[in-house]
Image (cartoon, rainbow, N blue to C red; front, side, top):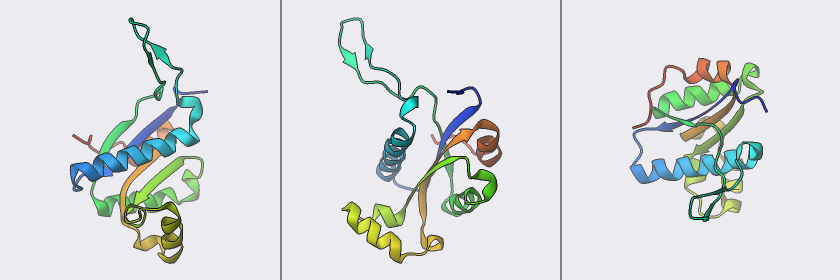
Length: 140
């Protein structure tokens, strides 16, 4: 796989409480792992012989943005120019549900423009990802 020309970022609403930021990051990461299994490395043994499960083999830049700008970013990602990027989003619609079936039903009743995005992960062509997120600050 050509990882030199690929990039992965997660853009999180920095105004969220730290627990919601952590939860959003975890959810985005799990979904990325499902769709990018080839980017999860092999298990690693340490010097004492204990095994540590493989982690993602490429960096994920953690960036921050306001909720309004996250909405704009998500809208841009629906444009045909960015069809080849892998996009994972997590919104208030999903976050408000405790059971996945509830999320499916709720999402079907809420138009996309009514979703408030808590975070978006993007993976794909480095130039395209940089064009979309290159000016965003790191989440600290």
